[in-house]
Image (tube, rainbow, N blue to C red; front, side):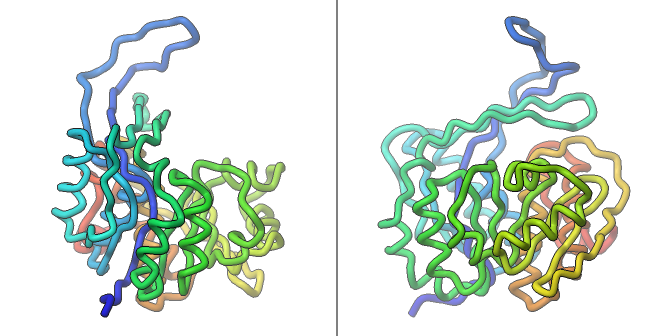
Length: 296
C-alpha cells in the first residue's frame, strides 16, 4: 500500500550556480563577480525541502541527470528526509540555474532544464498511487506542461505555482486551490496590472478555487472561494539573498494546507517562512526549521 504523505511535489531539480555582483552587465559588457557557489535548487526540489524541513511528510516526483549535479541533488533531498522512490535518472545533464545576485539580495535567473524536460505523463502514471495518497500535490512549470496536468488530474488538492509564467489550459486553473503567483506572474496571466486585491479577484474569475499573490517584503494577499481577499503582512527582515524565497513560501503553504489550516492562516505562516529564508544566502541552504519560524 502506498504511504500517505502531507505533500507530494512533482517538479524540477536544478543545480543553482550562483555569483554575486555589484551590478549586472549590460549587452556586450563583462563585470567581475564573486567566487562561484553551487547549491541544490530547482523550484520543485526547493518546495519539497522547505516542506520537509518544517515537518511535512514529503515525497518527490521528478528527474535528474546522470552527471555529478544529479548525485548532489539526490543526496540533498535525501538528507532532508524526502521520499525519492519516484525521482528517476536520465542519461545526460541535470537541470541547471545560472543565478546572479545583486547587492540588495535581488536575483536574475536563467534555467537550463536538462533532465527536468524529460519528465512525462508516463512517469506521472507510475506515481499515480503516490499522488492520490497525498493531502496536497505541489506543482510548478519547470517541468513539461503535460506532466503537470497529469499530476493535477490525480491530486486531491493542487497548489500550483505558475512559474515561470506561461499559458496554461483552463482545466489546470480550475484544479488550483490555490493558484500561487507573484505580481509579475499575475500581470502575465491577466495581461494587465493593478492593485494586488484587484489582480487576485481577476485571477479568481479565470477559474481557480483560490488565489495567493506573493508581494515579497510586503507579504501576500489570499483570495478564497467566496471572493474575500485578505492582506497578509510579512515580518521585516534584512534581505541577504531572495533566491528560492518564493519556493519556500509555496512549500510552507502546501504543508499548512495539508494540516487543515484555512488559506489566510496558511498564507500568514508561509510569509514568515519566506522572511526567514531571505536572511541567508542560497535557496535550500537558507530554509528554516520550524523553531526558527516560530521566533519571527
